Image (cartoon, rainbow, N blue to C red):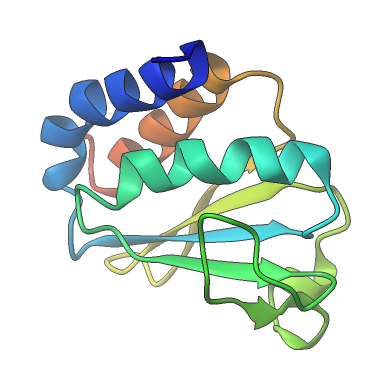
Length: 130
């Protein structure tokens, strides 16, 4: 098992119980582009965290192409929120309860830092549960 796979699997196991409480209350908007190296690094980490917890992710791609492992996407250039985002990747947390974006993570440094930032933003949007 390579280091990246190990990191991704450990993040999903560590964060899944805490994030399950956010299911149905929050969603994620991931703004990126298929050509962006940082977006391609962040997307698998985001998927490993959100998919087991059932947290929906809307991928908004600035080049209208999927960002693996996410196969579906919308064109960010025509999305009302994502079209304003220029820094890639940008991860926004949407709170259904608040009816607005409550958190935003701009950029990607490494898997650990990104996962911790996303987890904190999701838990804050879910009301600090977990």
